[in-house]
Image 1 (tube, rainbow, N blue to C red):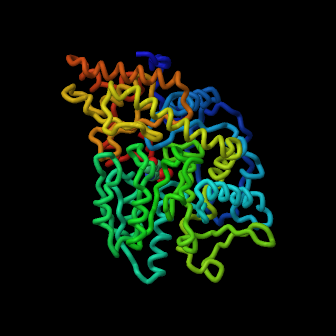
Image 2 (cartoon, rainbow, N blue to C red; image 1 turned 90 degrees about the vertical axis):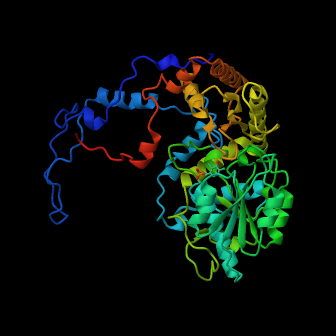
Image 3 (cartoon, protein in one colour; image 1 turned 120 degrees about the vertical axis):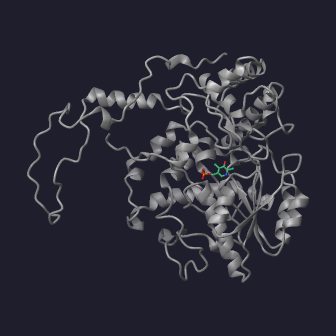
Length: 496
Ligand SMILES: *Cc1c(COP(=O)(O)O)cnc(C)c1O
């Protein structure tokens, strides 16, 4: 094995909570006694200590430093988690987002005092509209799934406005789980469209399902198999001739930025995951943003607020009424995840249009390098070339007793974050790898050598399967009971 995951093997401490480590009265700092409190809360003042743990400064520093070392993230390791676009996040973006003029803004400030921030929003809107060729955009969705919600609400409003409520949404069975979930959350019935043998939407099956009650097709392009939907123009044609809208899940936009204009594909609405394509640290549910571009037909139904430029400068239309008569309403407090918008704009301005296109091309090149290098050692369900992710299945593990899950866990011991497992569902035991443009050939070669060695080990028979079953062995925690964690989550610490 080439990478070796053991650099931090020793002295991995079981890290207790600060509340478990400290106890009241053991403070490492001397603070003056507080001045007597004047009760302005009508008897609501604190009756006793609130039970904060007391620790010395080195104890606190060590606690947080040790926790940070447990963080298995893009800043320390290769993180080929398919569908998530775990790319490098330039520090420049963080610097810009922390400028006091941006970071200290309050959403209730008068518009005249936040013209610079509104200009930032106007600029990012302009960039995204130009890149996609779409005429309108809603900036407020806070994530990809929220963008789906936004797009479906506008679609719903548009059909209702025409006086023909349609309540059925078609979703390919390779779709991300958020697609059917968002459709259901918006009150639509969801129907699956099968994939063909090439991992793309089965056009004939789609045509058969289209009818007067279909509100929209939700399609991901490039799709979750890492393949470009090469019949997308025929798909758009079919959807439109049934009077339905064409929703595109743009989470995989990183593969095509600057190469394809979304508008030219016949798409009516698409969300963009800024935290994937345009770099923002994400994972663990961290903040994202899912701006959603809209066609001319859907633009009047966009959610509030509407950012407009008038004689008095930038303005936000906050209310339904004569200024925004057909809006589908408000889907988020305030104006969206401003900090993420800001990071994305910093990324775009520093990359430039040509740089964004280059990033997309390099992401696709890296994925194809993985696919070609690994397709003999593993097994690939669809022949290449692929777009930005390389998809494998578990046929190479047949009769080894090793599963996709075991294989992924073994990769952790080798110092790599696992690829996405068991997604998309249309491929048995799927392993989905997304290297992004971030990675050098050297890193990819290390990863390839490690995966090949693991595959050979899995196939060697004998005790190999048991080693895989036991992995990971080098982590502070072994395999977790994920079912119990999901069914009986412990979300609050309670003193013993
Ligand atoms: C990430 C992703 C989503 C959901 O985006 P969030 O920002 O996590 O809500 C939807 N579809 C696809 C294909 C994705 O990869």
